[in-house]
Image (cartoon, rainbow, N blue to C red; front, top):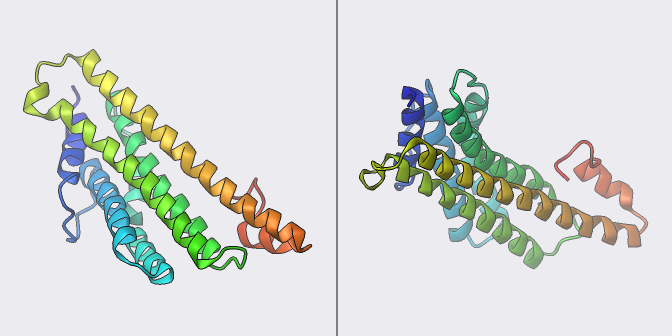
Length: 210
């Protein structure tokens, strides 16, 4: 298989280890993939260790912004073969889940429709979905581990395709979760004859994730 394919998969294998908060040299897909997954894992960890919802989000936002350069640069990588492209798309979906979380929850914090308890539940929901997405990436290391050396190309691609489809489903769930939460705000605002506030905060459906 193509050399870059193995590089990206090796990055995923390394990324499942506890994240080192060192600066990576972002010059190839290996470092970019590792940066995105480590950032997502760190967001999940931060979400589960900080109790105050506002302080929690500020830390999550900080981690996301630190890792965003990996997400942006990996999106721009085009010279990958088909196998590596599917891996790239899987990692980018996880990065996109982080982006949906940060961009929309930041608005929800400033939305008077939600109580502190509800915001905490929403944050936990995002964190759980992101955690499930990053956990799925661990399965990709099977195709470069010693126990998988007997796999043929079709079996390896089957693993990649399955993980990609499952991560894509979690990505869709995050969009749905965001949609439903904003819909709750819209319904509450409508009862107060103040739907304009919701549209100004979140934008229209055509402008935003929901």
